[in-house]
Amino acid sequence: MKAKVSVTLKRGILDPQGQAVLHALGSLGYRGVKDVRMGKLLELELAANDRAGAEAEVKAMCERLLANTIIEDYRIELVD
Amino acid sequence: MADTPYRIGVLVFPGSNCDRDCHHAVTQVMGATAEFIWHKEAALPPLDAVIIPGGFSYGDYLRTGAIARFSPVMAAVTSFAEAGGLVLGICNGFQILLEAGLLPGAMLRNQSLSFICRDIHVRVENTGTLFTGRCKPGQVLTLPIAHGEGNYYTDQSALSKLKAKNQVVFRYCTKEGAVTPEANPNGSLDHIAGITNAAGNVLGLMPHPERSAEALLGHEDGRLILLSLLDSITRGRVSAKPVLAS
Image (tube, rainbow over the protein chains, first blue to last red):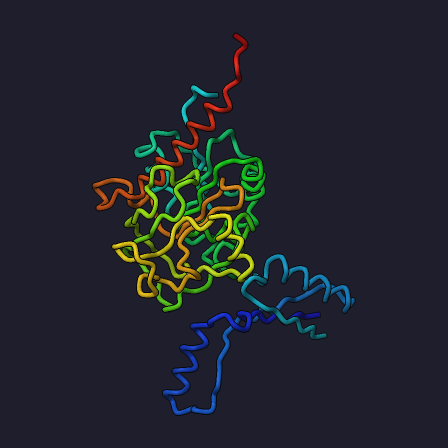
């Protein structure tokens, strides 16, 4: 099983990288982009087959290491 | 122990690059014994203080300080700090202390997205700490910074607590001591450049006092922080002396 974990800055926290990309897109003529948030994607290969157990474990990994929940949100997606 | 030389541990992680500067400052400026402590050590020798130096521990992978905070030595440093031991985290050391939860908050990328390496000014907001006793209230220090992630952030309730307990020790300011947006190099919340924990025995700051503690290096203001720490060690040793029956 694979877990895809995406980590992004919380809403309300200025994301200067996202803003820089937004401005670059604007200068290329893509005026329809309202906002850009940049983040990280972590792909974890898991030995586990138990979905609920895997989800709980990856959540614990996010809380302890993969994300800093003071500034970041995370989203877990399990792929069989 | 009161008469043995002062002994200060300087942690070394893979990617630390200010460890030798700190070693030099401890021996040459503070006149104490400095001991490098490799991050794999699970226990600390008897120490009067711990310095977590600047650098790029673990290449800043994931987040600055995020991997280093799980090095074995950090469990020992946490116990040391919880027992009241003096801990000074400089730059990456500050970032590690935040990730370890020994100080509240987190670091974001500098608002400009640039790595900033230059002299800045900070105002001393609290001279009652174990690290600022030699400073005058409101004194402006000139210190160098060199970081890409020094944009301090915490939520409003944590910020209120920091302010209520006078834990904000240094704020970025102009040469004259005015705290203005222009004088804030990295976008730090409330212009914060350095904070202590609630107990006051752990200080984290982004500027480098060890790089500005000798006239030869252009500035000596960092000396005030290092010598304040030395005073605190002396006071702690004196008060820890056994009282002899008369």
